Length: 209
View (cartoon, rainbow, N blue to C red):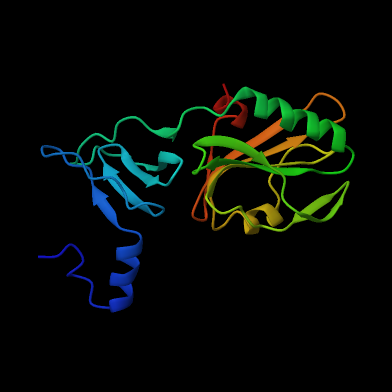
């Protein structure tokens, strides 16, 4: 019997096919890796996690904790892993410098994985409009690039994610960062974006080494 055979409406089958839910095996072999670029939900003894993988990330992130011990396998370690290792610290230094130099205006940049050269690079997108309270840019990545970090600054304002950010990030699969108070002691906001789902994440600076 197919896993989705109980679904009587074809729309539910399509939805299940695009975003499936699995049980964590208790006795058998571990689950195969998720389909590249997509996400799935896995139910284990402790609750529910989201799992996803793309060119640069492997993530297993908590969605809900169960108040009872469910009859499935243990979910195990959770978090975010960079498949190609940490980003070079020199790129973070450049980002910090640009954040300071641009203040009081905002600034935006991407750290990408260059598939051709097999390395990380910092890219500044084509700016359409910028000022102390906004930055808008052309959202086009160079061919052969996979976004790792989408970072922008808030000039003299504190770091936070706005409603505009929520719309911009709803289709992405990357770490998003904001740098605030760029004129003084900077503060930071970070989240992991996975196909429209936003998760708390460790400070994006910790992904550099």
